[in-house]
Image 1 (cartoon, rainbow, N blue to C red):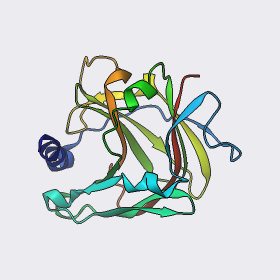
Image 2: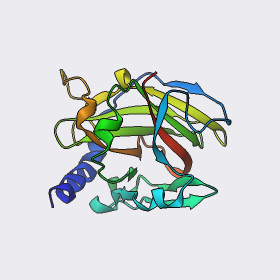
Image 3: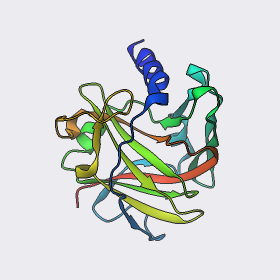
Image 4: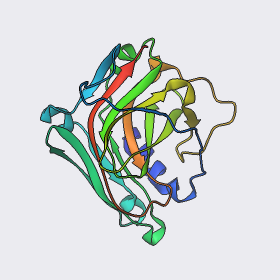
Length: 204
């Protein structure tokens, strides 16, 4: 029940999201690897069963009309749909299930490494915790290009449930992270599509 209320509050507040600017992450392109060396796979979407645990949450909970879905296509999780700004809407999101194994998996991690084929939009990757603030970092995709996106943990920004930056927030504590996911916000209206092959945790 707590989680449902939390999701609702996040959705309701998104029209007043404050801009949280971060430097764009480094991009690595190498189709021969699922994730980079010294990385551990957190989510391997080449397996259809992995996608089944992911769910979407759109601005429809507050009257918006945006649409999104997760589908399994050619061994990737495709998060796609249409972002609309009508009725004060403007967000779509996709999150994996709460996972008690993530804290130990992220022990000693220095970065998140995503392999994805994007559409030119800038997506927001979020690390969630029940025991503290959530943390976000944006990454800009290249249309129809399969790439690795390196998101250093040191570049994540602490945010509240409105995605507004929290001043003087504590440093990201990996032992508290139990959920990962994506948002499309920032008034990037129109059709969108990002095909994700894997999410890795790197200690390099």
